[in-house]
Length: 212
Image 1: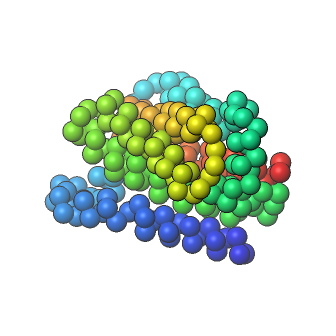
Image 2: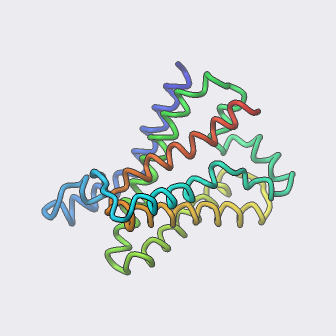
């Protein structure tokens, strides 16, 4: 029960962090044009390409969550990552089945929902409206990646430059694919990537929960 309460607390914290700026931006500049949910991409998705194209893109998108690319990192970095409290998944290390419900809640809502609302729903769509789809997706992906590097530094995680390059490339690729899926495959809806993002993080957390 304590873990579930902690997960709900993280959702509230992330909502408080990620939602005020998008909501105020919409309220001041766009509330007369369309609803907040439509403006930020929270509407029913429709596939704008053949189903097999969407399936292939989805599979490529989840590949980083299935394959452990950390095998390419120095062992010293792995040790630091596994011991650091800055990585949320470590809180569930070794908890096995006890981690399933709280981790699912945290990953789907605190991570998937909140991060997609801000980076793909707010930042990405604002950039796209100004500089075009591909450029907008690319810039938001770079910002998304840099935030991961900055959080790592702020958390005092002492890892090598190779790890920072790794996390930038992985988070950046994720951010680009998420933006591409939303805008090019699912008619601008961010709901598919909320689900994929949340489930991807959940898979990673379950690996930690059952294998450490």
